[in-house]
Every structure is written in C-alpha cells, then in structure tokens.
Image (tube, rainbow, N blue to C red):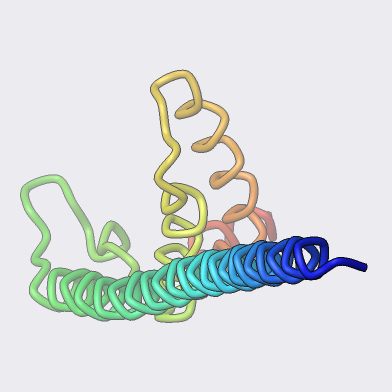
Length: 149
C-alpha cells in the first residue's frame, strides 16, 4: 500500500468513526426522548387518576354532609309540625332513617356524577335511581297499617 492509499484509508476510517459517533448520539438521544415522553405520559395518566379519585372522595364527603343537613332539616320540620285545620296527628310527617338519606345522596352522586349527562339521559337515569332506591325505602307506619288490614 502506498502512503497515499494509507492516508485515504485513514481518512475514511476517521469519517466512518465520526459518522458512527453521530449515529450513536442520535440513537441515544432518540431513546432518551422516547423514555421522557413515556414517563410524562405515565405521570399525566397517574395525575388524572389521582385527581379523579380525589374528586370522587370529595363528592362522597359532600354527599355525607348533604345527607346530614337534609336529614336534620326534615327531623326539625317534623318536630315543629303542628296540625292545621282539618289535619290530625296521624298526618304528622314521618322522617326516614339517616341511612336512607345517606344512600340516596350517594346514589345521586353515582348516577349523575360522571360529568357526561344530557337531557336525553335524564329519564333513564332518574328511573334507574328510583328503581335502586325502591329497595332501600323504609316502611312507613301508615304503610304497615294499610298492609295489615
């Protein structure tokens, strides 16, 4: 091999080494970018799930607070009730048990809390809620008397 050919082979080797370094850097950069994108995507998904779980917890806390307030209001109204003209004491309003109020509020949150509600869905959702609550509705004293007769 002549010195010119040796110089040519050496320069080709240097160019090939340079191209190899550039390709290696591109491949590793691509791997870093893809891993970063996957990590951001996973973090975003995890954050969204954590946020949804926090919202569900918050809705349930609100349902509990609403059930307590609603039950207290009905209880106070029943205690303050006085018969009007033509009414007797058997017309006194009865207050459902606290667990019924709580179950009702939680079912409302479950039925309407998904955020995807439309006017077309309302009748079906109300019917579903009414059917579900039918099993939990406490028996009233007047209903028990009418069934006994």
